[in-house]
Length: 223
Image (cartoon, rainbow, N blue to C red; front, side, top):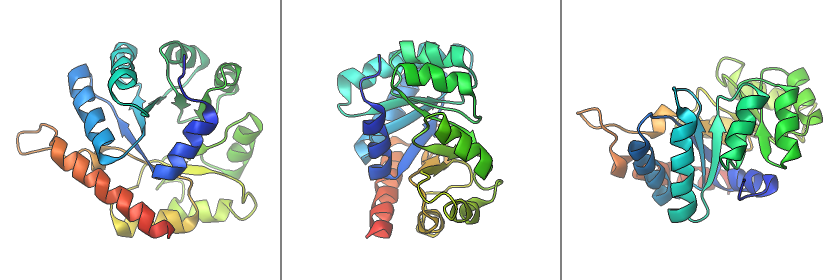
């Protein structure tokens, strides 16, 4: 079962300001990348449900996180239905992220008091998601639905909305400033966090360094 409450997850996401989004079919690679994120200062991690047997990879990764990386909150993204949500909840996911709004998913997560972050592309969808109990809503794809201007526009009629854009976010001061100035709760960042070397393997030291720098930028932008 989930180790952390939905409120703990939501507050941690806000504190860091960045949620890494990652998938690899090799659990050992995932462990290395997860540890690099942890050493960089991140305490939430979204593993995307994309490949065959992804749940088996997550199961091992979550056990590793709970045993070795104290305070790391493990979530699963790209979840589309209640059945898959329940599968990952049984494997101890601390939060569930989806590219869509699905009421049955909300029920599955709410029954277990686990944070659920649905993907929204309009004020109507955001309001409906909040009605279903979403503390944080994901806008996806972030850049395509309107980028920071969309977030700022939404915060007019819905100033209480906690928004996490994914897609179109980079770990640079210029890019992060546009999102945080618009009022995001946090941002999700994928491949741009996970630096590779010339051979195509993940440069773990560079990943940690990139994350530390991005977190410093977020802190600076919030002061």
